Image 1 (spheres, rainbow, N blue to C red):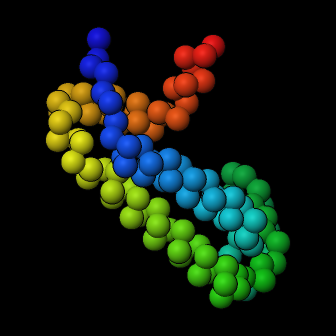
Image 2: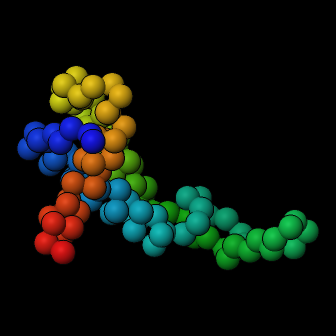
Amino acid sequence: MATTYEFPSDLLAGQEELHQVRAELSALLKRLPWSVEPREGFSDHTGWRKVERPASPGWSADEQAEVEKLRRREHELAVFVSTHRFWGEVAAADRVETRSRLKHAREEPARDEA
């Protein structure tokens, strides 16, 4: 059985913020037009599946800045979490499982209550 680790509070907070930033970025990208630059729509029926895109007005400067801000923060948090000093305390053979546990740490209380 794998060792149970007590994650440091800053690592848990970083992982939680990373989840939030990724969810916010994903929601924003789903709302935005398919092309950053204005593009005409197209339809391609020659491939193995039909591909269609409506005309895209492109992204505004504010939308581009918001995407860039979120991507930059996502990168900062991913680096923080993956290079945290805590990982030096975890045996190399246990790091993948422990990382997975950290990713799902916010779900743990719900499982314990069930």
